[in-house]
Image (cartoon, rainbow over all chains, first blue to last red; front, side, top):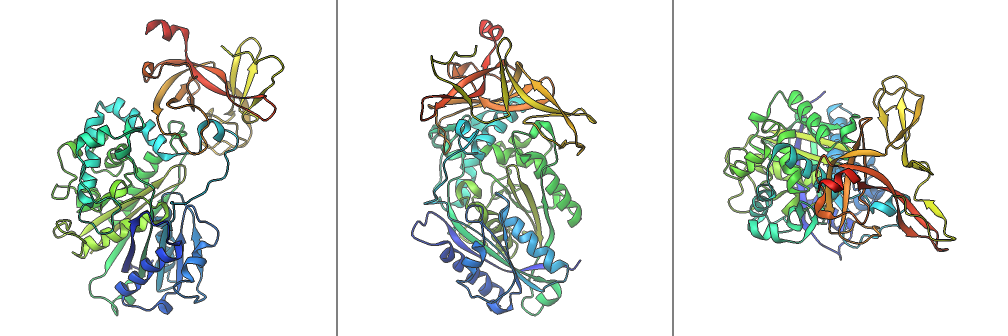
Length: 373
Length: 149
């Protein structure tokens, strides 16, 4: 396997853009990534494109906005790990030596999304909502390790603060703990401000073999590990789609492949679909021992400026969560941080050299990428 | 505990193959147990997801289990038909199986706790166009638990 680097990243801001088409969102992201990489579209030899809701051959449709070059375009649908899975597919093609330059693209249009009528058990439960699963998991986690919703809700305060100066973020406003706790209840213990929003967005990465990349850049960001896993059967996780164990395995395998450990990380972008999810993932990613996740947020360690900054972008809670785009939005943030190019004031993590990006989709997939410089 | 259907109305299961309603004993869930590793799964499967062996045997779950975790939902997911708020519970049965469903509608929402004993109940979800009841399995606190409150 060859070394693979990230040559360029691009991203459309995340938010609600009901009047923009998926193609328009994607054009911005891909155009920016190409400019950042310093290459024209015709140099890209293969694309992996991902969206949860659009499906089909929507990759061909959105990329036709950039140009119909005839390259292989693969469409990925892997729940919330879709963007990261697209990057994994492109990574495998470059690492294996099939192509030198590939595009990974993720995008989503959630505003104006029509859903078909429910069938079978969906008439009892409604359509599967990850927020409810994370409420169930959060309740159990709080019960096992004895902490309060007031402690857990600090995650929302942190991530909203991080997003304030991020020009790509959907919500750029600080929130107080009282506001978070007093926002309307969604599913106990989660209030509205403890849940990620519905978002539109697109993000892209141009990746390249390390050898060829020397022609284009002197400061490549290396993909030290790219891992995707699915759920291994365990009866205790039949209701949760394996969110915890998949995240643990994806992280462990990534650390192993990169020859690094959690102690080497300068920043983490993780899948904070809810405040409860962020606390569980502190533990799943090995940032602390099991049961101690809540201490990281209570002691302020995961704020920018803390010993283990988590979600400096604002995370899913404040940057936003355009399902299929999220994995690559994280890679955008980590890449910019490692280059010392974090957008917005006071968001740059000093001398960041190693970053982890983690996404997970219920009942489907978890992905971890370790990027280094 | 099963609510008797109104006269002339049929009860139609919300989905085939998930549960049976026995005249004396009440509701049971249709699960499968692996002949090789003994793992029990719900709903039924042909191949064991744990050891991958084919040939699972039918098994019934219920009536009693304990709440593993729960939540009270205040914002309905797309397609949800019932009134808000409602309680959703994950219940562990003795065969090491977790099953998710709603708590029966008359369950006091503030009475729930992890570890609480519940039993299966058949409850109306909605009606079809000719007025038949669409029914599903739900959970309700056992009499034992209600007395302890």
